[in-house]
Length: 193
Image (cartoon, rainbow, N blue to C red; front, side):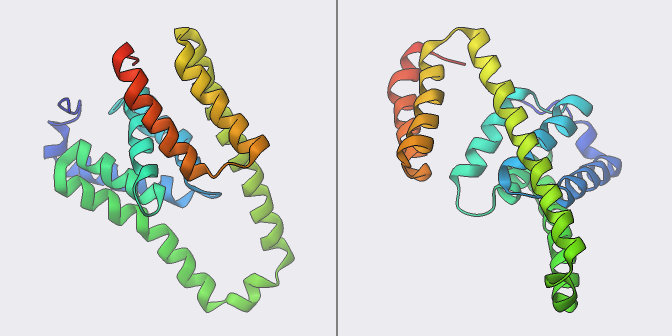
């Protein structure tokens, strides 16, 4: 891996606070599943801080998604390690698990009030709609980038995976494995980036 752009910054306590704070906020607002983390990671670490680029973000999320466990936690561990080694991983990991831990603890204490509260249900429905919009936005952006490159194989993989899952209900885990094999066998030769 290349040297992280913030390697010198990683030696300062301020860096770890920034990493903790930003990862904590991302975790607190990752509602609706692991894919919601993509636009949030991109906005914070690519656009705002410039610590990683778009390609690294996609690679990070791809690796995080292919590993067992929660995508957001896996991605934060990888990101933290990329930024500042083991200390960065531990910082990002603790910041990622704290918001759900706090939220679940509060819900557990007041479960009956939350489970039957109409306003809580409406708020969660609204957050699901927003998360869906963010995922669609990222998907469209990624598709546009692949189309701009005018590389037919990645576009065919995207469309084939979409069609297989949507119309033929092929298991998504099987599709990820098939896409990985196609990438390994065909894209390696063409040096797609």
